[in-house]
Image (cartoon, rainbow, N blue to C red; front, side, top):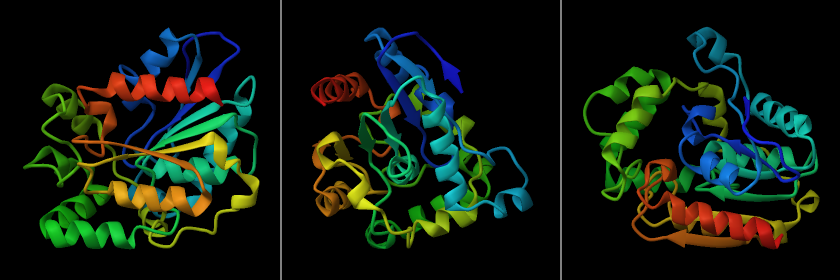
Amino acid sequence: MTDLQNSERVVLFVPGAMTGDWIWEDNFAQAFSEAGYTVRTMSFRGHGATLVERMSLRFDDYVKDCVTEISRCSRAPHIVGHSLGGLVALHAATQVPVESMALLSPAPIGGMTRSIASLAATSPMSVFKFSAALLNARVTRYGTPPLGVYSPSCEPERANAITAQLKSEALPVILKLLAPPKLAVDRLDANRILMVGAEGDKIIPASEVRRSAALINARFKSYRGMSHTFQAEREWPVVADDLLRFFART
């Protein structure tokens, strides 16, 4: 976890599956720091742990990690969450105050079943690759990534650097995404939540992000051509600028 700049405005970046605080370092975190935010990044417990240790972890453990990091902020932070971290952050925000939230391709509130079925219909091999990578991240070093993780608009060097740092995930946490805990929607301010989709994302399609936004009456925005991994996109500064404008209005 890092503190990059002192300011009255605080933002906490919550990573997706298989990644950690490092994935934000030379992209979104940098942009927010330059914009005058105190930038905090976090990682979930278990990355780098043994398989036995990871099998003991639960979705609620990740929520607790996020709640802890929010509570450590000097004031209620803005949240930028990605994928698994987006859904975790939503649940954490029902327990502790946050200023506003921007969630990039968040895991669906209603579960991943439709997303997985959509990916399987398009590329069954991608489902196999993704599942294998969750158990053993080393397999991501071989062959092509699952469809939609990266796009032609990603920077190859950045994508390769991200792939090289991926860590095996806690399987019970991932399985819980099929049927996540019920979200306490009444404890959230939907006007302060933006859900962001990518039209090139086959892992969590933009249509599923739109569906989640509709479930809680949150705002929705999507980007053409981009992939699941916003941090690897050449045009990530465009997304960062849009998030900064959203936070400035809320």
